[in-house]
Amino acid sequence: MASGAAGRARRARRRVRVVHPAAARTRSAEDWWWDRLAPSGSGYHLLQSDSMLLVLPGPRPARPRAHRRAARRAQRLRSPGSRAAEAKPRTAPAPTALQEPDPGWGYRVPLEILLQIFGLLVAADGPIPFLGRAARVCRLWNEAASQPALWHTLTLSPPLAGRPAKSGAKAEKKLLSSLEWLMPNRFSQLQRLTLIHWKSQVHPVLKLVSESCPRLTFLKLSDCHGVTPDALIMLAKACPQLHSLDIQHSMVESTAVVSFLEEAGPRMQKLWLTYNSQTTAILGALLGSCCPQLQVLEVSTGLNHNITPLQLPVEALQKGCPQLQVLRLLNLMWLPKPSGRAMTPGPGFPSLEELCLASSTCNFVSNEVLGRLLHGSPHLRLLDLRGCARITPAGLHDLPCQELEQLHLGLYGMSDRLTLAKEGSPLLTQKWCHSLRELDLSGQGFSEKDLEQALAAFSGTPGGSHLALCSLNLRGTRVTPGTVSSVISSCPGLQYLNLESCRCLPRGLKRAYRGPEEVQWCLEQLLTSLPSPS
Image (cartoon, rainbow, N blue to C red; front, top):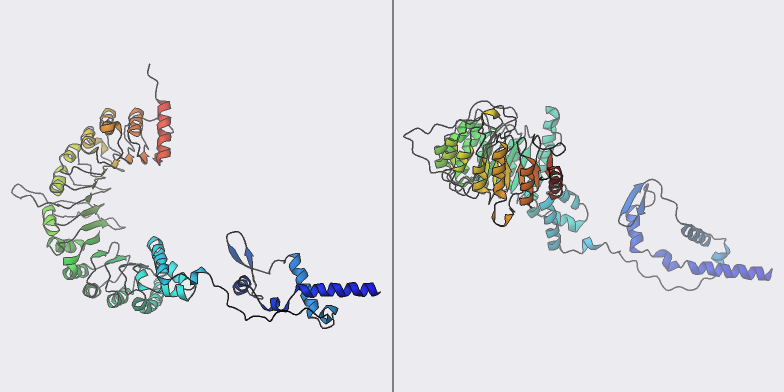
């Protein structure tokens, strides 16, 4: 009996050594964070893996066996009648004061460095929703996310866009009430603003912008209604740096746009319009030299195709917008005014770098009109004439531009392909083979021999390798396997090759190839399919 009592006393002393009072009262930083993320009784538990920490709903998983044993021992020690509690434990050092755990690296990063990190993320993905979520992490992140310099680009759209009119108006009013605080406190340095699907509250929003965003440079209104002349004029006066306006696919009165151009015309650089019955008045203001510094002009049709011809005199446009660098007349039935025998040629566009006249409808652009447009444009880099069936290779060869990089002559869905010239493609490649990066001849009715001579120009460059060409579209042409294999071998930088609907090619190869690996695979298949020389 004495030996049994002595054994029980020794075991009780060992249990007392396991749990110290100081250790029971102190917690590590890791335990503190775990209790903050998933406190007991909250209905959530933590699951830690190699690279992440998950907060999962449901009961806490079963603890390891050692943890359960330690918990039972601590409970027995706390019970008043247990022998282990009566045993005298060893004296422990006085407990130290509880220290606040280290919150992590996010609190120690200087504000300037954090702003640079946030700036990179905003430049890649925009300020929303990242900045709104980052502001809820901690006080330091909230201070960084609240800097107006990060809110330089913004897109605003009611959350219930496309719903019934009553619900949409209610959503716009709710968003407007938030903007009344956000505009002066967050968007004071806003530079680019896009409004989408605003139907009833456009005027109040533009009023807030004019009052709080003096640095605005770009404004886009997409599918917006109710834009009044007063709102645009107020915006032009309050934002002296505003130089770009995009009102495509929006219902804006022509008087509002004309009034805006009269106020902000001398500094306007970019303008996007949708062609309708009111566009004539806006173009008339441009021809009257109200925007002498305009660099980009784009006019396109809306969702409902407009069959009314656009009458735009070439020479008057050259005089009204002499600094034009980009001119896009997309999917329009453009009816240029005849030049006449006594009419003097216009000054041209000396700075023009891009001309796009792509259309899927009837097009009246001819060699003569193209010559009037580009006779003074030696720096042209991109020429898009898709759908312009009246343009011939001889007319293109007479253009003054010598460093053309992108030439698009595709004819998609054209019914008058049989009336096209069947020769002359070598005139294009011989002139621009040294600078062409993208060439589109899809749908053109050139013969096999004509295409062979044209594409042979890329293999005749000095050194036998053409590094500039990276995109070639031969869809629906009469190109032969030998011609294609020669082009691929001579152009190692080719990234895109379209051979769809090419009747002279073997089956299985009539598709689009993207990337150098697919293009090289096409070359291997063509070489194996070619007949061996006898």
